[in-house]
Image (cartoon, rainbow, N blue to C red; front, side, top):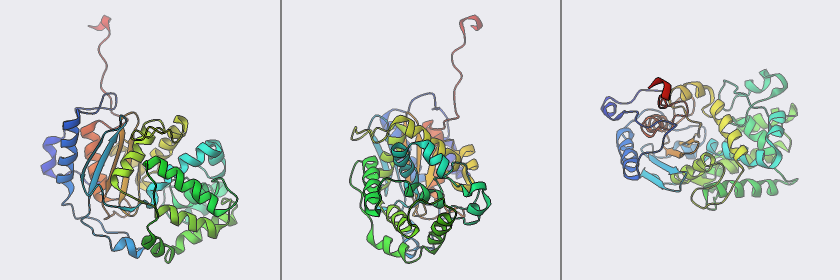
Length: 341
């Protein structure tokens, strides 16, 4: 991940750590506003080219939002601009399926370990013993989706859309234009689904699952929506805005663990080293980070790096993780023992 611009360096004070609290509300909003200004002019990366509708998105769009565990939301830039979830949907899919079927069912039939390869890799399926994958890459997400309840595709779809809508706190709808564009060009996902099915690692019709996966990916959200969704994972499964319990706390724990190991695909290790927060990206430019007990951070910026992760999204998340104390590995020493004083 690229370092911060030089002009950003004076604000890196690292005052807040994972064992503390978020800054006061006005200071938090000021940090969100400042972070937006610091990174809005970054012009690196390219829009995802495989799907024409995503390639045509304005590259200068950039929004940031933070929703806290106590229900506050802070935003800057294009935080209300709608875009499609794409792979950012994967953690929430895993959470609702694990809640319904049990996490051990997903572990035994899909797998959990990172592949270390691209998000749409076919080779990864062939190389792994038992043809296991993980729920944060395309193959594993489709396998997870195939475990969703329902003997018919439409029942599975209702389960998925309703579950993700509850995370967002509002009804999510499919962007038909993007859905048509992806459907016309998702040959690789079709191949992945058929290969999984041939290896008995897909548990429903591969054509239907590819379509359901495409529909899920084309659900439309904003950065504000994603921040609420991520905050729900950070808040033990209770949506901090609506107060509704979406999944239980154990399902959140398992989801954050899977995000930690493979949410940023083959760059997940560098992400943890630099940012230290469970995260997930999507090729439309969405990105989330969930800091347990604190809240959810989301960003939207279409230009991606070679691994398929938003360039501005990574930079602003790294910066705010440091400034807001979101890094789950960062701690401060406790008070000295009385005998040491």
